[in-house]
Image (cartoon, rainbow, N blue to C red; front, side, top):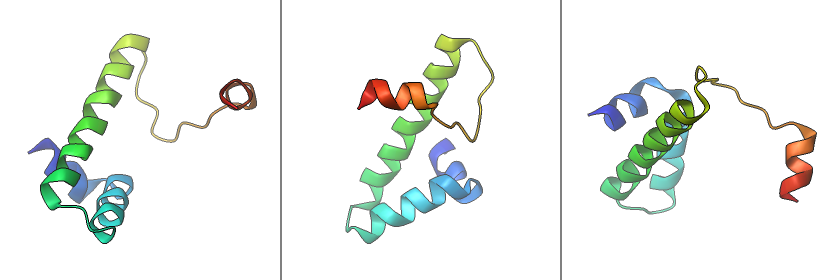
Length: 67
C-alpha cells in the first residue's frame, strides 16, 4: 500500500513508475522496485540518524570519489 501511495503522491516516484512502465516492465515488477527504493531510503535515514532530505545533491568531492 505504501508503494501505491507514493506512486500517486510523489512526483519523483510517479515519473520513475511511468518511465519503467514505458520501458515495457510488468506493473508488479515496477511496484516492487518502488518498494525497494522506499526501504533503502528508510534504512539510509536510520543509519545516518538524520532527517530525510528530499532534494539531495551530491557534492563535487563525492562525485570525484565515485568516478
